[in-house]
Each structure stands twice: as C-alpha cells, then as structure tokens.
Length: 402
Image (cartoon, rainbow, N blue to C red; front, side, top):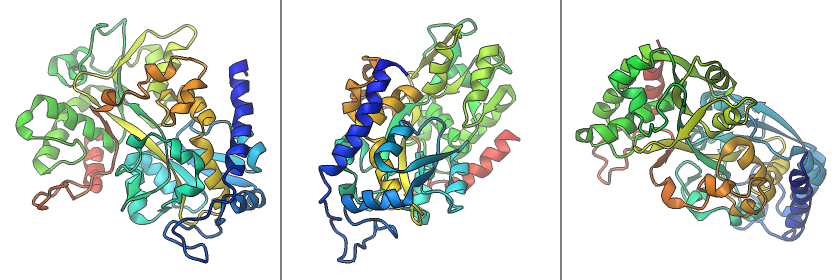
C-alpha cells in the first residue's frame, strides 16, 4: 500500500467516526413518532447514534456490486464493526435477480436496474439526514430519474462515467473520433470479427444515439425513449452490425481486456476501467479511448438499500462510507470514473484525476446519456406517444444476439 493510499485508510476511519459522531443527535426527519415513514426499513435506528449501536450488533453487510466497486472495506469494518461481503453482478438483470433473493442488504445499481427496483418496491427510499456525506454530493447528480422517485432519494450516487469508444491504435487510425467505425458498412467490413460490443439490451440506446446523429428525420431526442418506428430502426441497425461482431463482452470486464490484449478485438465500446487496465499493463496495450463527437451513453450508479434488508444499519453506514471523500477517491481511481463528492479530488493519488475525468465540468457531460430503464411514458405533456418498454428491449436483444 502506497503512502498516499495509507493516508486514505487512516482518513477513512477518522472520517467515518468523526462524521458520525458530529451528528449523533440527528433525528429521522419526516418520520412518525415510532420511527416509521416511507423511507423506514424494519430494524433501522432512528438516529445516527442508534444506527451505529445497532450496526455493531448486526456485524456485517451483504452487497451486490459491480466488480471493484466496494472500497476501503477493512477501514469500514474497523470504524463500524460491519464486515463487508460482496457478490459481483455481471449485468443489471443479474443484479436485480440477486437482490430479489433477499440475501443481500444493498446493491450498486445502474440506471437500467435502479428504475425497475424503485418501481417494484425492492429498494427503499432513504432518509438523507441519516447519511451525512449526502450533503456533499454534487447537486447535478441528485434527484435524477434513475436515483429518485416522487421527490425522494433512493440511495446515494456512487460515481459516473462514459461508455467510451476504445480501439487499438496499431489497427485503427489514431485520429478516430466517431462511432461510425462500428456502424458504417465499410468500417464493419474492415474490422469484421474484431468488433467488441457490450452484451446487454441497454446497448440498443447506443444504436439509437447513432441514429439520432445520422438520421434526424427519426426525431430521436432521448435514446432511452423510443417510439416503435425509432426502436425498429435501432434494432435493424444492430442486426446489420451483428454478423461483424467478434465478441459481446459481459459485465465483468476481464474477457474484453483479454481480447484487446491478444488482438482478437480492436475496436468497440468499453468502460474506463478496461482502458486503464490495458494502458497500465506491462507491457501496455496500445489503445485509445474517446468520447466520440456524437456523444455517448454512460452511467451514474446508485447504492440502494433492499427494502427488507437484514442489516439495514450497516447498510446505512455503508452508503455514507461510499460517498465519503476517502472512499470516493479510492473508487474513482480504482474503477476509472468521476467522483460525485468533489472533496475526493484532493485525495486521489493522481492529482489530475478529477480534471482528466471531468468531475466538475458539467458541460462535458451534456452529451452523455446516463443509463435508465425504458418505460412506456415518453414524457409527452399530452401522453400522445407510447414508448417501447424494457421487456421489449430484452426480447429484441435476444433476437439480435441470435
């Protein structure tokens, strides 16, 4: 562990203890006299002091997460008495299935899972007064349709990032800045069998985003809100692309990293994590990753508490921990994303990390369309249009994949 990361560990323990003790008298806010309220999970303490006490009795928290999301777990256990147990999910669908087993207290949900979980009641809204670090989360990340409902926050934002276009610079021109390299007929022929695509129905939105830029007559505004004509056009584009795809990589990134390393894949869509692993390898793999000129999809994930969590007090402390400056710094660099608590920027080992990942440059994110769940409501004021829903997206993706 480097000196800088050692400081993070010490600060994490101190931050959890000092942050908690500074607000031990905080009440539940809006709850009933018996500690109830829409946000209340059975067994949750009614003050931060009580949550701390009950957490030590619980002794553990069980999490469904994207790989490498949980950070500074030993420091968290030392400060709270809660051992952290994690289960990696390979896709949003898998994470929903796992959390619905009742075996887990919380989940790091992307937008294409979080909306479904809020709708079904599998996750609970939170009392942000009992999550002290929530006040330091960037305002532009709060109260979004993928992390809030009816004006209530459902969990705490984790971080955000773009889905990059990544390519090997020894195979693809270094000045490539457009998604046409994975959609254009001539480019598909050129890179036949070496194109790497994310294996999830949410990728239909990436096709819709390309159509938004290249077929304005379709009048696509939001790539997740597609009427039947727009949706059919996106599916047709994906079916045309499919014969040229060499791999559909799963939510665990090791497969894609290996494919780029050995040259089986040379171009496609990726997360910043894979790009960092490839460029930091010894020897480094010659890859570039860009946000193309047409914009891109992306993610802003949320730590959410299961409505029937067995360890709700440890889960509340965990949510607060994961948006502390110390944990935010660790996960931002570990996974390759922008922290949502900008106090983390002073703690990253790379002093330029937040600048490189555009943490406080809201204009850079204007053309990043965060994952969410496709629903029938297209957002029309007069409800005159019906959009294609998540279930139809999943069915179409099965057909595309063959």
